[in-house]
Image (tube, rainbow, N blue to C red; front, top):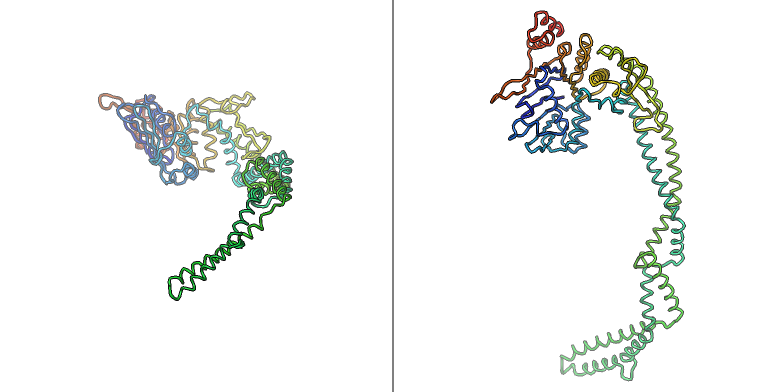
Length: 553
């Protein structure tokens, strides 16, 4: 609900503020007084683009600010969260325009883009002006009207749950089928690669170890010769070095009694002797590991050559990477077999969900088909009462080729404005004023069923008078029992139904400039204003009495 609208430095408005009540707010005033300018300022709050020509004082900003009570507007609160904005019970929306033409928008002092502003404020204000056909043109709006009046909320929720599940299964199934098609395309080649790696059956690090072994085998004679020579010097020569070290240790031991330092030197030589013997033993072991077997060399060369070719083929550098590729190929081939079973399961689930979807869609469609002629008859009756006696309203429901999130129905509001027998979509068949009245009739039907934003009607009563205007006023008053309504009107029958009456006028301000102002009329001023709408600037007593009668006083 709109709590307050303040406008500063906009067109011929220097400064004004409006605080509408929660029911029917009537706005009247002479033609050219500035009612449309106020709506223009409000349009900026709703995300319209700004124009610097609206600035009175080029040295100051134009600031339009609106405050809303959003405690009961759950859709708006959800939209705030989606836009990553703080959720509060009261929302302040502000537009600023500077002399350079730059415009900024704020929601609760947080800067937002115009697209975000437009999306969010659509949940706060429904500004229905003449020639504004957006709401009635919108297929989703038309569908929502039918579903609200048919009380389809529960079954529609059930349908949408199943539809979402169906979509998810179809999406997953298509992905699996695409995956299967791709795998089948590559399956033969992958199987060949797998078989090739399986047949060679490398163990971890085998290629790297084979390379080292081959180097050793190619240098085997030299390696054996050096190992043998070292062992010969240490342990097997005419005068083995190890034995000589041991002999010198024994010599040191013989003088240890008279030369104590010899004992430590003797122990060190004993350690060297033990190490020399150990080295000799290891040299012998190492010599035994070196093979001069040409068959082993040929086998190692064959394995290493095969490994290097496979490494180049798979663009890897090690045996272990080839093993990883082998295992990965194995998993993919195994998954290919499992994928067929998964697809079969998804196909079965798809059929089950489709059956449930079709059943629920049929129930939803039947409910719509049943309520559509009832709604059409009610709207036709209301249109007759608001000055469109020749209008025939109908709701066309056709079957979609495939279900969507709202069912299997394509709903179109259609109108024959002059009993021609030819129905057209409403937005094509109706004039701007007629569109406003059609919107009023539709919204009056759904007012009790759902939450609507603040409804603003700009001269919804254009082109009508008398009883039709009285009926428009009654519809607006009834609508305002459930939703905040603001209506700009020139009809006394409509103005008389308002719970708060705003009067827009011009006055001469500072330096002789003309400014638009607005004020709330008290009960007696309201009667006078209505009487002037009936009988001119100098209303007669009869006009005043007529005004009191219209206002129920």
